[in-house]
Image (cartoon, rainbow, N blue to C red; front, top):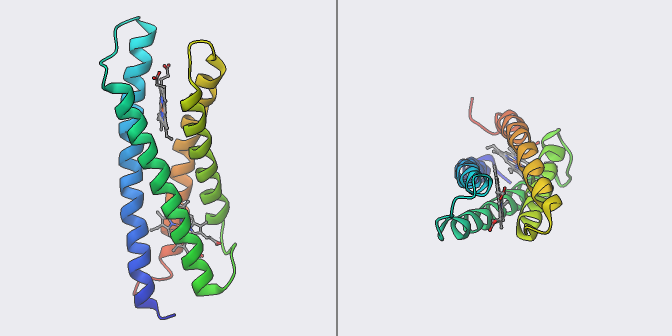
Length: 146
Ligand code: HEM
Ligand code: HEM
């Protein structure tokens, strides 16, 4: 496959990553408000949890989309996977996002351990996003015109 047809793919990846980081930031803000309202036993605005969930679903879709672009693009170009540590970074981020979404959905006053899993995943996710952005940015250099 020729390079120009590939560049748009990685440009797509960069844009989706921007959207993912925005979604993560908004999830962190809405999550912190949910957490603060619970701790101080304030009533929650009724729209806050649904907004948090919807943003969460968007993040899951974006990250799965990035995984698909990465796998298809790499297989199309090399015919094999595993050309840098971007692969483990990407797989880790996808697993963390899926675990976070699953545990978030189980949060219930009777199940405090799910809240702990949700919050731990999301803190690790900040590191995961850093790793995947940095390694993605490094490998994308190969495709950019000099
Ligand atoms: C991956 C997608 C995500 C989904 C599907 C999701 C879903 C949920 C759900 C359903 C709740 C429970 C809301 C309720 O009590 O009704 C929740 C709570 C929360 N989420 Fe998320 N979430 C996601 C990502 C995140 C992220 C990225 C962060 C932070 C960076 C975050 C931080 C929080 C916090 C702090 C709470 C409040 C827990 C508490 O009540 O103390 N979530 N989330
Ligand atoms: C959550 C975000 C991301 C995930 C889950 C992800 C996932 C993947 C995966 C699994 C691969 C195959 C790697 C291999 O087998 O060696 C890949 C390749 C690639 N990704 Fe990503 N990626 C993400 C973000 C990014 C970003 C932000 C960029 C930069 C714009 C990027 C650029 C690339 C490039 C250029 C390749 C080709 C690998 C190479 O040439 O060695 N990715 N991605």
